[in-house]
Image 1: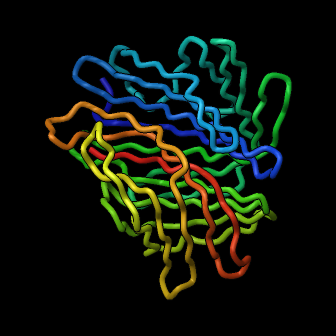
Image 2: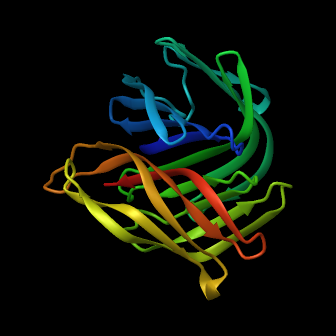
Length: 277
């Protein structure tokens, strides 16, 4: 049997075109237990902040030595290239056909727990259209006794900038994040540490009886970075727990603006991966 814990691979395609505010996030989870591995695959198609959850499937497999490996699943297929590199994700089912094409890696960062954030050139094939963009490929893992993996955000701008933020561990409100930036000409900056993402407005998410953000304020050390994001969509699930406050897991759509100093203020939209145990 393999290592015990939770493993996650997330892929988020996002355009930077003003005509096509398109995103396709995939969240692929594997949780090991004594008798096997519980897997969940979730996929969304996002057009102009309208979220369509087009796929969700949970199933169990026998114990695996490498439970973090992505497995095909019915209408969800993968194409793997040299060195086990994920080249393509293919979905054909329920009247929907789409593919994510993972091209050249532009930059790769590692967080404080060994999670990898790989930003790639990529494309979405939607029906017979090919739409260019960037793909964030995130690989994370934790042992069973460790806290949840923490939040991360992937933000895109029409001017071609990509911004990635990652919090440590199972942090609550006003956590300190690391921030990385990749410009339209592939100029790379960061990581900035000590970037605060404060929940300046919240409300109660009733199914889990816990606060969730409505507005974030971003502030960096010495005022180098600032910004404001509003929540545009909640794609959250309540997980089993001992209550009364229950775990939540899912994605949060966000949009707003961020001042990175040199490029000035840029309008951004994107997704937050949100997990609370």
